[in-house]
Image (cartoon, rainbow, N blue to C red; front, side, top):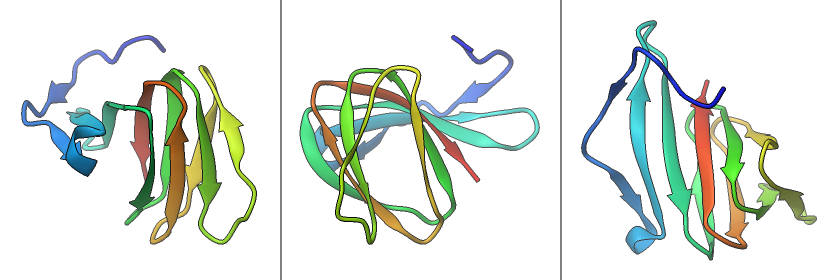
Length: 103
């Protein structure tokens, strides 16, 4: 899917890590939400409250889930899932464009 139709977008950006990650919340008619954003080249740690699936739209990254020692690589068209109440390290190797699916 290259676009989301019939949605609302929260105008105020979510800015994390001094601007290294910027996203916008997208609200769907059924009440679900996603975020669409970019992570600039950096190594960051994110905490999750609910399960998340990160879908790569463009760019490349390495990811290490909480409790794992190995990094996995992801690129366009690939995704990874993170359990709720957990965390993950991500190293954006270039600007990483993503859609985060919650729940």
